[in-house]
Structure formats: C-alpha cells, structure tokens
Image (cartoon, rainbow over all chains, first blue to last red; front, side, top):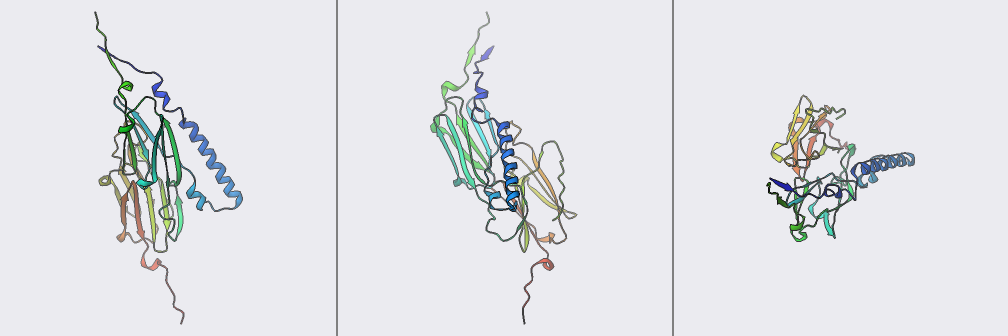
Amino acid sequence: MSLMKRNPTQELSFWNREFPSFRGLQSLQNDMNRIFDDYFRGDNLVNDSFFSRDWNPAVDIVENNDNYILKAELPGMNKDDVKITLENNLLTIRGEKKNEYAKKEGSYHRVERSYGSFERTFTIPGSIKSNDIDAQYNNGILTLTLPKAEEAKPKMIDVKVK
Amino acid sequence: MQTETVEKKTMQSIVPAVNILETPVSYIVSLDIPGAAKESIKANIENNTLIVAATIAENLETANIEGRYYREFSLGGDIDVQTVDAQYNLGVLTVTLNKKLQYLPKQIQIK
C-alpha cells in the first residue's frame, strides 16, 4: 500500500493571478462597452480598432507527476511574435497577432477571429527546472512543458501495514 | 454567401471562429482550427454548401482543446465551385472561393 503526499493548495495556486470566469465576464463587459462606444461615435463596427483589440487566448494547464504542461491556442501566429518569460515563479506569455489580410482590398462579411496583443501570466505552484523548459509551436498550439524540480514531485511513502 | 447554418453534429463539436473577406474576385474564408491534424481536415462543397470539418489531434485530458471542428456555409450563386482552393497553416484553414467569370468586375473602355 502506498500513499501519495499531496499539497492541497497546489491545484488552486495556478489561478491566483487570473480567475477565468471573472476574467470572462470582465472582458465581455469591456467588449460591450467598446461596441456601445463605437456605435455612438458612429464608427463602423468593422474598423481598425476591431482588429487591434486585445484578446485572451484559451489556455489549458495540466499537471502530471513530472511536468506542468501548458497549452495555448494561438492560431495563425508567427512563432517570432510570441514571447515567453519566466520571472521568479511567474510565467508570462505575450505577443501580437496581426490581421493577415489587412492590406487586401475588399469588404468583410464576418470577423470573428481575434487579433491584437495579448498577455497572460500564470503563477507556477511549485519549483521547476527553469533551464529545462520546452516550448513547441505546432498547428497553432503553443505547448510549454515545465519539468518539476525534484522537491516538487509527489513523494511516495510506503506505509507498512503491521 | 448570404446565410449560414451552424450544425452541431455531436456534443463535442466546436464551431470555429471565421473571417469572411470578399475581394473583387473571390471570397476568402479563414477559420481558426488550432490543434487540427492536417490529414483530418475536410472541406467539401455539396449542394452549394461549404462544409468544413476537422479533428483535433492534441490529446489532452481537458475540455478546452478536444473534439472536432464543424461548420457549414451556404454559398451564393456567384461562386465557381470548380476552382476552390484550401490551405492549412499554423492552425488556420483558408478557403478561397473564386467568383464566376460573369461576376468579376469589368473594365469598360471609353471610346
């Protein structure tokens, strides 16, 4: 029989910096405000500001025994336009996506895809091997693998049943 | 390209975000389908309907990026369905639908 030692706060600490549902509401409200502002200024909804507004790429974070794995949906981005920084235990992904058809003559029927700059910051809950972080960009998804330091890995404690 | 129907085939279908740009000679339809495997992408035109479907290759046990993409677009009569082009790059599928000859802008010479 073996017991897994777990830190109960570990699962929560990733969300210290951002609480996703609150952020969602906040950004929805910002969008609504912007739409109203644009409307009363008489601006066309499909204008430059529409393309340059900030966006929050969707992110999944999983933890297994050896790694924290973060996946961000960044479709259509140039690899060089994404910057990843680690400062203390704060991981920041920032970048800017430009409209690839901005210079093309024509009119838009639909604009749903997001453009503009983004920045997301996450608190890494445990210590990691900061020199061994791996970043891959494939099919529009950025995958960051952050290997845990030995002391952050779950320890197996054998409990002898007498 | 006037109307559009969004049909959910299964519970896990994701409706991808789309931009539709009309140029003088074509419609450029670009869809965000991050994580889609290139070989799984299907872009077909049936009965004047463009159907785009793809399966997400990323295998992660979370809800956000799992499942498949699916979206349909009804096409107008001005599109030449014989010359459709589709490109997949960096998680973005771009379908170019050319306009029929008689719908292209004409230059009228002044005599």
